[in-house]
Image 1 (tube, rainbow, N blue to C red):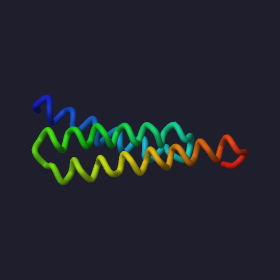
Image 2: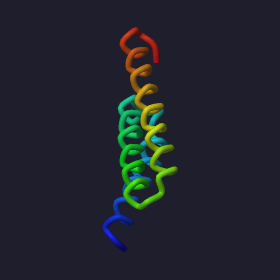
Image 3: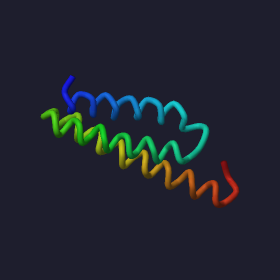
Image 4: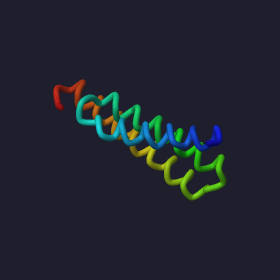
Length: 78
């Protein structure tokens, strides 16, 4: 296995794990956003730019969800 393949495996595995744990803490939502950035970097690095673009968009969506979840928590929600 090449280092790039191992990086990709790590990125998508961390996406899966953090997504599965999102209901436990809003920090897992942020970790999912970061994992999506890793997945995006992997996609661009290996030449699959559509994958890289979509993962970058997912990172933005997840970061926004984290921001809204933190905001709701600060105002007594959640």
